[in-house]
Length: 174
Length: 432
Image (cartoon, rainbow over all chains, first blue to last red; front, side):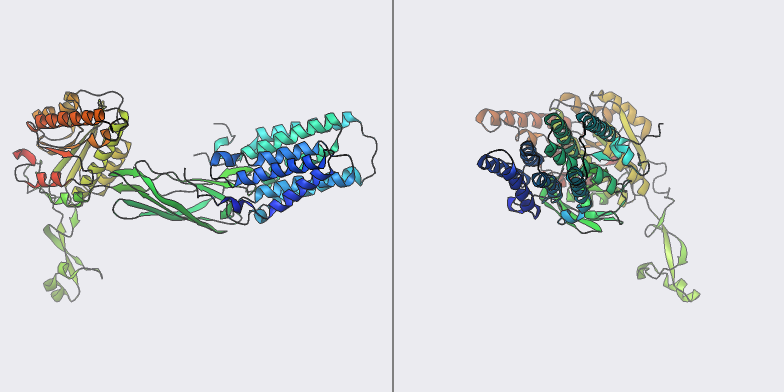
């Protein structure tokens, strides 16, 4: 199958790359890992993703979401429980989703067209953060949290297994 | 029938969604195990984004309005068109993947231009050898800008056929063919057209050529009247394609069959244009026959038969072809046989059909250009093999000449030899 030839690597540096890089570096800075290692790790992760995204080889390009996501996930495990670092983590997650929409191999304006998706992700992150830190809290047991998480995973598994639920009407199956 | 829609034709999560769901689930589990809210907060957008993309996109397959056509001349085929979408579907979110038709190779990178309403495409291919091949419909899918979910796009693509055959075939229709019907010359076609025997007078249309106006009748009637003629049928021709496997191997067999199909297509088009009756028989294990007929509908029948012709797995005996031909076609019809004559069995076809009363002319696509391109034929030993193959082929063609004239078709873009042969007196029809 033919596809339009890809842009050079430099076009992979879209407007969301600075946001993602700033978020990843900030999370690295506030994490418990020594700053040098953390910042280098975040930079390598984001940089590798950006370079892979600009690769002409389709196989390489398919792997572009992994390094940045891996770096962010690893860094998030070492972020302390404090309002500002956790807000940075939440915002960086939303920035990552926005960065996915900014695809250099597709027509320009993906960030604007995908605004509904990343803004939902951003809203959810901010709500989760504010629920954790701004609302009056009580000592919630780990069991309740685990039950909520298990329920979420169950709902998620159901959604993934039934993509037809997202069809408004029956698709034409000629 | 279950009421559940076909998942392949409906909404689809893309691998990127599975990645986000998987990482999100892992982060959730780690967050609970480590009693750390940071992984949980990172998991939230990863969970939400695919679900939001699924819910906020179109809820049913978007409909595309499609205009496409084939252009180009010579060996080049240019495929241009546009795909238009109605709001709320944004054309920039539609991914179009175009396949290259079999037998064509891309000549230039495909060009796409898109705005919110439509995608314009321009693809250029070239045909290394004569070919008749359908242009595959592109795969269209709406994909959300984050690349997380996908939904197929529906629309009716026009069925286009890329046909590139030797230009000599345009003039082959001028060959005078033998008729095989009773009282030749006295049985007229029922078709009415612009040439042939006078049939009647009718009202002239505004675009009528002056030669067709009956000026005397017009002067009497006081309005323009035009002549009508009975279309004259020129004769009959049968195209017999040998689609049996040979010792050359499946790849070369397919390539040679593709050449034969393209030439048969060009010959059929040319003769049908001249209002001749054209029949087509493809012989693999059994005979697939289209009886003699003329007209546009016959053109469509021939086209469908040519497009479904494939090299069969098992070869049928040559005699079976000759016997089956007599069921569908009258003896004496001029027969053009397309056969590679690559082995003894394929060479036996010609004497058998000749004995059954079909005067044949053989157009034999040569396998030598393909053999000389095979790996290992660059060294001295390889060149010797090709040379021996050439000598063997020459000997086989000479043997076949005893039963029918043979055109060695090695320059694939020219069949001047066949045209000249058919134009010779006493070569076509019963006189052969």
